[in-house]
Length: 133
Image (tube, rainbow, N blue to C red; front, side):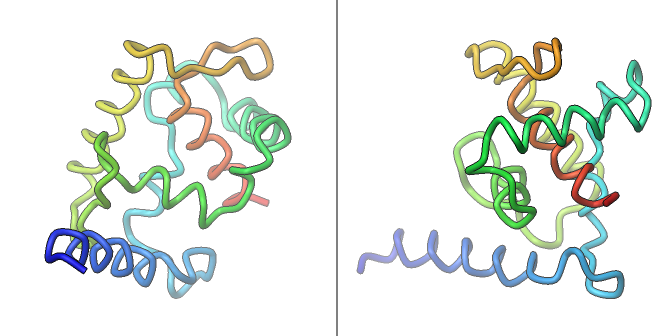
């Protein structure tokens, strides 16, 4: 295995280890709440609507209905490289906002309950729904 692949796989493994147990109260990542809060969408929708969107997206996209899968998808940058585990919330919010903008620019959108959303936003809603069950 070449060095580049080793470093990439090590980073992914580190992120996976860091995300295990995110649904446990005591083991929850400090940044987990940032991943599960669709910041811009929450300015126009209440919590109930966001959760309904999340539930519908999970039903609509069965391959992304598990929390660990959603966290893995949300916790990568736009090139697919995992976010460093020690990233602060400001950095993560900026990354998520950049991913949302890119989703809209590239047409990576989905219609859920009548809303046209960036896939990143829909994933955040799904994670929010799981987090508040």
